[in-house]
Length: 370
Image 1 (cartoon, rainbow, N blue to C red):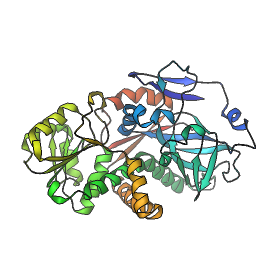
Image 2 (cartoon, one colour):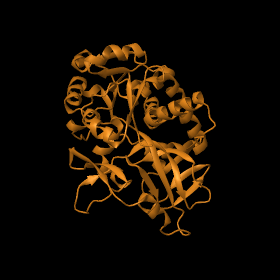
Image 3 (cartoon, helix red, strand yellow):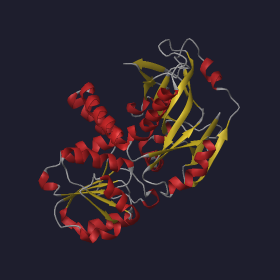
Image 4 (spheres, one colour):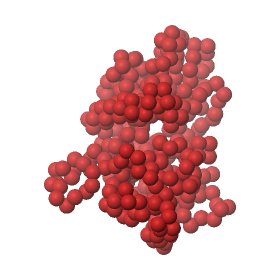
């Protein structure tokens, strides 16, 4: 099995590691005891969101999801989780058929071995011992239509495209929906001005779409070269470059920061002073420059989702969030170009581009393995 790994202390060191062990060996161990499942990963998405997993890997437990293969305990190699689709190739769980397909959280690797599983409401849940204490939303795998030899080319192509958009956007837009709820709950007197930093990120665009739907004005802040393209999407009430922050009005302001750029953060705080009412840090697209600050809050979507489910119920929350995400994905199909790349070696080749923010905002990268 091949697996993409990165040095947890040095993001410029990354590699593809290979083991000769067959995933079927892990499947048969403990047969009849644990409900083991082996999934062959077909393809996965990689976005700036995955770099956030890298930056907060220790703090929020992202390194614990997928242990690196063929490494010793004193090495610093880790595995960045990705969102993708895969097909079951072996199963000890009678409720999980070989050939069934799922969308969910995977390692950038050829296979995922689930040491124990359960099925709830048709969803596959990875109950491997090392994942039980991690946020449960990441352990749920949603069923997808099976690939059949009888499907015509048009249906197969449409299904493939839909799955690509789901991999790229579902986790991001789920976060966008959470953030829209948080901002909407802030009294209007405290958010006369609303800023979204790193406005071209896909999570930001999903958030801006939510604001537009709700009639909330938001100013997008981005690099000068991306101002025109964001204005053309029509979801921000205004778009400015980072060099134009002096134009901000002195009134109560809420900032949703997807960038983590320390210089930009300092400029905004200096400009607004006491008019800055909330500073919500989410993603880290400028992760190299991140400097934690005590006067801001770090938003963690799984915690918000868990709280909201306890308030309004699981079914109601899923209905609201799924409805928004589906609508936002349909909107995104009009401007997002999906680019498929083949193999883990392609991720290795592209990784520096992802790190440096060189992937165009209207492009999504998918890495195919099947």
